[in-house]
Amino acid sequence: MSETADPKTSTVIDPATVETRRGSSYPPDLAHFAAGRARQALGDVAGLKGFGVNLTRLDPGSWSSIRHWHSREDEFVYVIEGEVVLVTDAGERTLGPGMAAGFPAGIADGHHLINRSGAVVTYLEIGTRHEEDDCFYPDADLQYRHQDGAFTRKDGSPV
Image 1: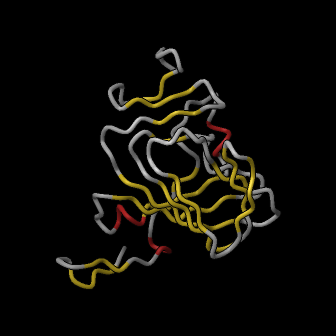
Image 2: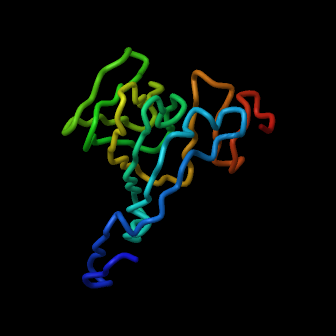
């Protein structure tokens, strides 16, 4: 249960009280890529509508997602604890505590994080919530088109 300072102005959140969701909504044949990810939707608890905020943990060896990019959603990550590898079209870069990365909407540069360390990594994910966003996965036969409202294969067939 989150504490509310004043329901008209702000919400105080204790992450220990927020539900943790493990894994992803990827189709079964691709779900293993994010099986070691745990998220707490802090932005939802706060009632935020314009952008989302997730407190995310990656187990050792886990991925944040399949490498992807968004047509209309900006994304930002901020590492709180641990060391994670950011993979983009340009290559790999290690991010540690206090480091951040941003991914502007509409730039076809697939990205994701991989925890190659032996410890859990904790970071914040922040992203806009655009209803007409499409998401593309350059390394997998997968896409999400808002008009379909579901994942499909790149040729548009159902998963």
